[in-house]
Image 1 (cartoon, rainbow over the protein chains, first blue to last red):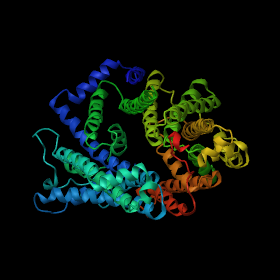
Image 2 (cartoon, rainbow over the protein chains, first blue to last red; image 1 turned 180 degrees about the vertical axis):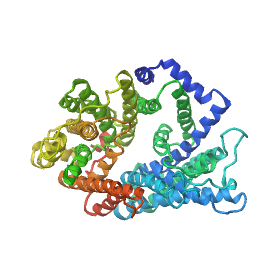
Image 3 (cartoon, rainbow over the protein chains, first blue to last red; image 1 turned 60 degrees about the vertical axis):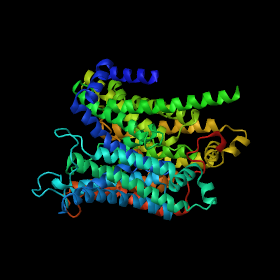
Image 4 (cartoon, helix red, strand yellow; image 1 turned 90 degrees about the vertical axis):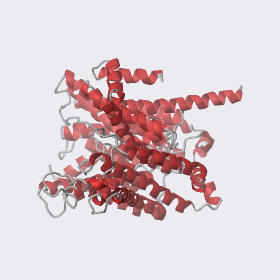
Length: 327
Length: 289
């Protein structure tokens, strides 16, 4: 942990600023004012939901790193559904359901490739990300472009399809409750249901699970679809809660950061809440640090250092455990 | 430059990264971090070449620093036995961050430092690294399939117990392959930054490392087929660029940009029937060796 701190401080100094000032700026930017706290939570929401998508898949050793693409497709579908003339409160529900459908459909392609041809998810889902970026680029210049056709962006969704704000005047929207509920729901699901146990069994031993007669292929396909739906939901929440329209480029790489969040949480859905909060605070804090003259890339270094120190700490712990057994 | 030279020049960075990933996957190490090591190589090459004025120094330094990055990867995957995908992700974050921070820091002290002279063409408009990419097709094939070292590397990924039984060290082979992968990624990065664009920009590898990973699968873990796949991918890229420059209105350009990826995906789907990855790919624990 000390090494991690020292590394961070060193890199910040190279970037030409005092580490203390950066730490202060980060803290101030993340928690300083009511507005900053709201911004931290707003950044936490997509990270939490995408991290849940990663967790569900990684539990079964399905390395779905295509959450970024599923997020984008969720946003596309939400943007389309949010403009439909659906009455009143149903509009939000329709928008979010559409986003889940979009994410799941995008995940369906790697799932089918896995099922029929045994193509590794880690590759197919990744390639789907690049295609998704271009899908967004295309729809905001084609079918979903704003009516005046000036910029590569869509028209805003209808007001009825927006997620309401938690406190008037602040950015924080009710998507936070959806995200938290999802975390608790998936924690229960993975812990207490047959499905959760099956995922655990497959993750721990694929061959053994097959021998035991589990419908492995079917479970894995549905896992990937659930993961995709969650990724899509994150995109939908972002459309309905924050931006209200689609632009190109749309994601800030939430789907990739989600992998770090999920691993930091050791694949625990409830554990993903504080982990996402940490990264949310880093994101929100870094925009403030930027005004202190620190480039955003520093954030990536800090993320990497956090990951490396977790891995190092886990290794030391297993070493200690081993030596404990011997003595 | 003729179209063919163009294609081969653009294929070189991806192709060199492919070779790196290939060598590493042969011994069972998943290399998500090709991308990160390329970035480190790209920045190192530009800075050292611009400071010293010699592109060859840039190439050597890029190799060296990418090998150091690979060593970091190895410490975590081989010594601490951490999951390869996690370590690779962390290395990528680190590389994007550090190259971003350092390039800004260097630029502050010397505004022109990120612009280096580019590699000069040697024959038919191809530079040294492009030639290395071509030369490595037969060389790597010979190394992997016709030498004791190559057989040892392949056996490490397929049947590590046999390697141990034959009196060789699985660990030595893995370290060797991992560092070799770093060196190749360093060359890949250099061929991008001082070979093609003679400057460094943030995240300039633009997912080429990930494309390389997919191309290895398409190329069925064979250096020859991987090179063929890379050349196909590069020709699509060049085609797409020329169509775009030619003011094509037939297809919206995002679809053109997505085309190489879509075809890679199709190739993945069709290639898999008769191929499988090295048996011990991604295994970390002692009991599995």
